[in-house]
Amino acid sequence: MDFIKVISEIREGNAKSFKLLYATYAPKFKGIAHRYTNDADRANDMVQESFIKIYKNINSYKGDGNFEGWMKRILINNCLNHIKKEKKYVFELGESLSAQPSSNWDEAIDVLSFDEIVTVIDKLPLGYKTVFNLSVFEGYSHKEISELINISESASRSQLTKAKNKLKEELTKMNIFSSIA
Image 1: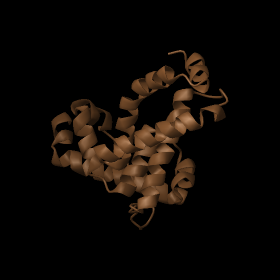
Image 2 (image 1 turned 90 degrees about the vertical axis):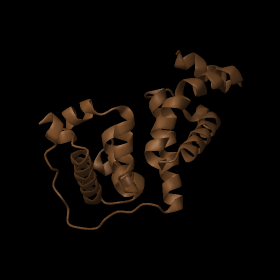
Image 3 (image 1 turned 135 degrees about the horizontal axis):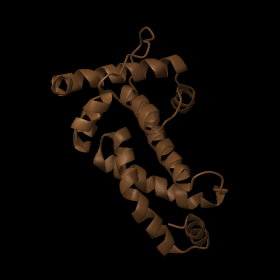
């Protein structure tokens, strides 16, 4: 897709170009939104709202950086704002945990289907899942995560470690680690 052309056409009011952009990215964005909302209807709402914001703010995109990344940032911020508004974050307090070794993670992921991975991640408490998604899938640093969701960097590190431990526990229950050892 020629983003420069599509962006220019959308800025000129070309509805077909916007529909093309939506058709191209909505399925991917629904998957991203579902990771944060754990609800198909809410994920669809987040995608719709995000594309409205993309359309309304397309003139603020200056061409610096990746356009898909710019759109994705709008989606993620929209999902995080929804979570904040609903006040559904549940962060466990406790001592800071150092990162645990992640042996066999790659092998475990290779054994599971995409749906199985999503199902396991969906079992995480929302605080864990949010930090896990932002860190692992979106590639944000703990500093960026702390700024996005208003927690300390150490809380972000702790939540990620706890999320990984919980995932490992779930994978162990599924006998994933024993089947690849």
